[in-house]
Image (cartoon, rainbow, N blue to C red; front, side):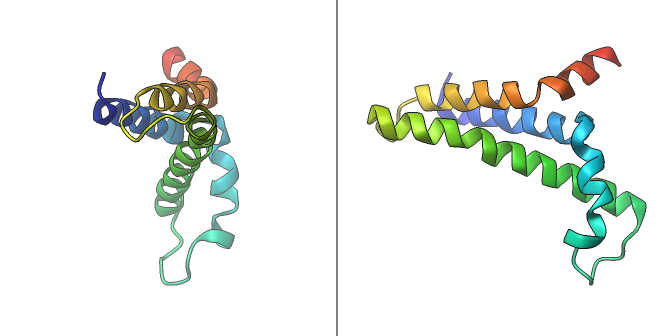
Amino acid sequence: MDRETLFAVISGICIVNGIFSPLVALPYALSPIWMPDFIPLSPSIAAYGSSLLLSFATLLVAGVPAAIYERSSGAGGEATMPMYVWLGATVALSLPALGRLVSL
């Protein structure tokens, strides 16, 4: 697969993790702390923001092993192996959410 397709798959898995993760309750409970004051604090907005926050956190945290691999291997800007490492880390972080999705 090319890099753009891999990034689309990684982003999709992160979105699934943000929606179905059992950890989404934590940012939802802390939403009065991290949400800005100009946004009305309704339950639907807090749930959407919590899901978005968890999706983005998954994307960032899963990118750390890929960055370490890319730096240590000396791979160039067009290498696809760091993207596969990123995909593997994303799937590993999303296993609880994927399990919940399959059980539905």
